[in-house]
Image (tube, rainbow, N blue to C red; front, top):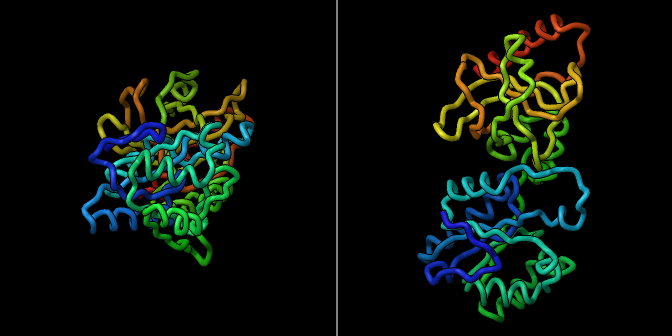
Length: 308
């Protein structure tokens, strides 16, 4: 799949594309509806389809001190967009220049002149341009006058409420990964490189693969039933994981620590993706190491049961 930079012109083969415009961080069911309409439209007219995203997220640009909230990395988004059937991913690198671009210039100079877009598809609440003054009405009016076609996809609802990245983040912070997965259409997953740690888990019979959480949203700290995928091989493992600061040990250190059942291989230096399926309990400090080990055994039994 092509990975495009909004600051560069595209090849002739990608001009005339249909572009799905949005941030599409979680690529939840609402995002998928917008992208699906763009891909369908492109197929009907024999055109390329492009799904856009913004990196960094505009919120991070305007509020640099905001707590991490990303639901996916760019690499994960690229794989999701490819699986949806898109021809390419377009990354808008959000910086001062882009933030200061008027909505009219965004349409005329970027979408039409630089990318040669034939049409765009957005959600009804999509805004763009300096001061977020661009909207679907401007795309229809000003964009239409310049020959840019546009379509709008209405919001998708789940359990009586609009599906949104904000609702997904709230569900994860509340320890409800199943609700988040329903809206995402897949479990929330953190991807990272397995690092060397203090190896305490190994000494108590529960060797873990240590991952930094980086810029991902922090789900509720605690123990989860998880699956892990080794990206190099595609192997999927079942397990239990702790995400948090490990109150049993000093000094506190934020980590994602999955323990995979029936696995004895070496994962150091490998990239894995840990998917959160069920929340088991919050983090806790135990009176003794023995009490911790007894609870870990119960956690693993419960995770095995839930994961089938």
